[in-house]
Length: 492
Ligand code: ARG
Image (tube, rainbow, N blue to C red; front, side):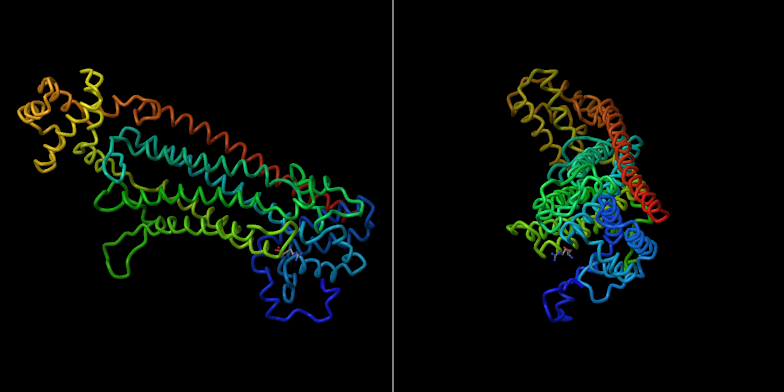
C-alpha cells in the first residue's frame, strides 16, 4: 500500500523477512485508539470534515470490536494493515486521510509506549501483591529461628521471616524503579511525524490528552528515534528477574530433603516420569531460567540500538519481540512466585532444629565476651573459633556440649584469663532465641526490629497500591473518554 515509488512489489520472501505482523498483534488495540485520537484531532483542527471523520471512526470502531476482520495478509505491519482496512471500509476519500500528518515512525513508538504503560501497571500491581504476601507469611514465621547463610555455610541465627522481608525490600526497590520509569514512558510522541514534524495544522497536546499521556516527547527527532525509555524499562525487569531468581534458588535449596525448611504446595510441584517419590520445584527452576531470558532480551535490545543513527531505522522494529517478551515473562513469573509464597509450607521445627545445633551462635558468643568481659573483638574471635574447632572435632557437637574442662584447656592455650565457668554460662545461655534477642541493631532479625520492618513494608506497599490504582484508573478513564468522544462524533 505504501509503494508509491517502486514499480515492482516486494518479493514474498522479503515481505516475510520484513514483517512484524506476528508481534504487532499486541499493539493493534493501541494502534486503533491512537488512530481514533489522531483522526478526531485532525477534524477538530479543520483538516478533515465531520463526515470523513465519521467514516474513519466507524471503521476503526469495527476494527476495535472485531480485530479479526482486519486482513493481515500481504502487509508489512499492523499499521499498514489497519490503514488498508480503514481505506477499504471508509473509502479512499475519507480513509485515505487518516494518515495525514502522521508517520509509522511516531505511530509505532506511540503504540509501544501505550502498551508498556499498561504492562508497567500490571507488573507493579502483581509485585505489590507479592510483597504483601511476603509480609503476611513473615508475620506467621516471625519468631522461628533458622540459620542464615553466607557462602551457603551457616553464618548467624536469623528467622525465615527476616529472609522473606529481605525479598520484600528488594522487590519494593524493583517496583520503585518500574514505577519511576512510567513517568518517562507516559509521554506522547504522536505528531512528531516521520522525523521533522508536519506543516499541517495539528494539536499534539490534544492527542496526548485523548490518549491519557501526561505530556509530550517534545523534539520530533527525539520522539521518533529514542528508545531509552524502553531500555530503562527492560533493565528494571532484568534487575527484578535477578531478585526473583535469588528467591527461586533459595526456595529450591530449602525444599530439598537435606534442608527441609519448606515444602512447595502440590499445585506448584512437578513430578518425574520415572521416580515416583518426586516432587520437583519446576516453576522455581523456570523462574531461574527466565531471569536469563529477560536479561538476554535486554542485551539484545541494547545491541540493536547501539550506534543507530538518529531517525527511524527498521532495526528498531526488532526491539518489539524482546521487549514484549520481557513484559510477558515478568508478569507470569511474578504471579507464579506470589502463588508459591502464598502456598508454601513452612517447616518451623526443621528450622528450629537446624538453628539449635548450629555454630551460627558463635558471633553472638564472641560479642558477649566483648560487651560483658570487655575483650577485644579479635581475642573473642580467637577464643570462640577454638571452641568451635574443638566441638567440631568431637563429631560436630553443639558448643553447649563442651565440658568446662575443655573450655579451661582452650583458654589456657590461648593464654586468656577469662573464667571457664563464666564462658560456659554464656555458651549455655546462647540459645537461638537468645541470639535473636541480643541482636538489637536496626534491621536485624530481633523480633522488635522485624515488627518495625513489617509495619513499614505494609505501609509502603499499600501506598504503592494506591498509586498504581490511580494510574490504572487514569489510563482506563482516558480510554473511556476517548470512547465517549468517538461516540459523540459518530452520533453527530
Ligand atoms: N513495523 C515497523 C516497526 O515495527 C513500523 C515502522 C515502520 N517505519 C518505517 N519507516 N519503515 O518498527
